[in-house]
Image 1 (cartoon, each protein chain N blue to C red):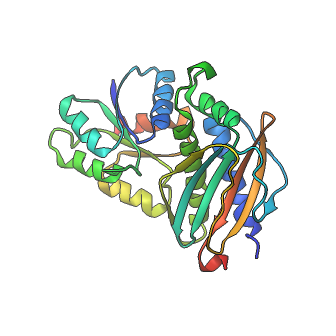
Image 2: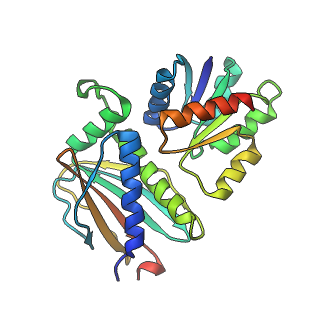
Image 3: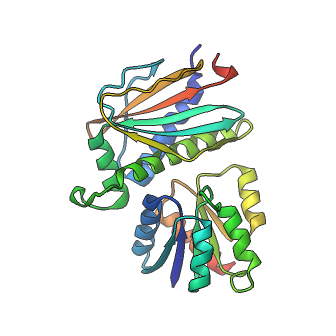
Amino acid sequence: MTIPAELLSNLMTSTEEVFETMVFKPLVRLPSADGEAAQKGTNVVATVAFAGHRRGLVAIHSSIDAARNIACAMLGIPEAEINGEIPDAMGEVANMVAGTFRNKLAAVEPASAIAVPTVTIGSDFSTKYLSAVRRARCPFEMEGMPIAVELILTGEEAA
Amino acid sequence: MRFLIVDDSSTMRRIIINTLNKLGYKDFYEAANGREGVDRLAAAPVDMVITDWNMPEMSGIDFIRAVRANAATKTLPVLMVTTNAAEDDIKEALRAGVNNYVVKPFTPDTIKEKIQAALKA
């Protein structure tokens, strides 16, 4: 069972709005992929859970270089001045993407609530979920660097 | 004009301060949650509060209720900057006592317009 196209469309539009308005960097869409797609080159995963009418997660995947670039753009500082701001900046990006996505859905269905962001930074890792989930990954390019936003639906809807 | 910026994200506090700088405002206090915001207001007066909603320890809504319950701050202009934009969210924030509401992501023009509206309220 795949994730409905309109949900992915809302998620991609939400991501583009956040990057245009708060990161000041436009995104180029690449073809989406269902399921547990490869996460090559991912060093940073920022995740926000949501619950209510729908349950699941919104996750932003990026390389550490892209995450640094995003943090610098949001904060208006040069790369040399970055000192520990990447997790908070990526968490805020995930919070805004998940919040905007949630608001778009709340216009047409009962609202869900979002949780505070969780950010993982490392190398050579992938994310897996033990329960039945539906996953879809929407890749973008930001100034030649890969970024992806993933929607994971859990619970009965995902079975 | 002095602002108190209340947000658990240091990135968002910095973005708001950068935006206010561009609008000509230069005087800020910061707090990482509603509890720190209450303490900050008790220590020194400000002219306007800009607060997030979802924060640990004390949420933005509980913080605004505390601001309105205090005689010294009950008429202080309060602007809420949040991703919560469902109709019920806005109603709850207005009931708690916000003067105006900005949905993230936002542009500097939106912040400017909402600050001016909150100051007139």
